[in-house]
Image (cartoon, rainbow, N blue to C red):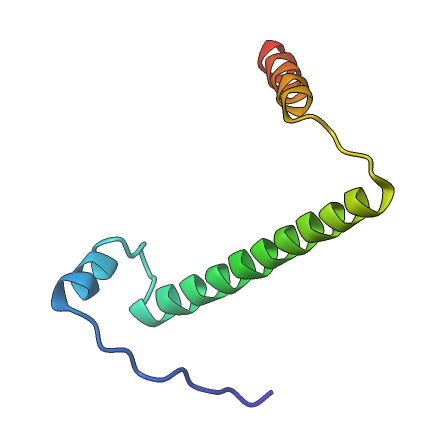
Length: 87
């Protein structure tokens, strides 16, 4: 597979130094930037999926007229959290 390049990035010297300060042994700044780019792409993809599911749920609720009271959801989440803590 042929590789491509990402446009060069101009940053403040402080940002570059901060990035260099957190590099792990054997890690290059280039590999750190690539990993950061991959992680942010995945995060945004997951965020969009979350939004899409929320919008679909909203439409389903509008279509069916079935809604859940927020307090009921929070109560159930608290119960799940407490059960997980006691394990």
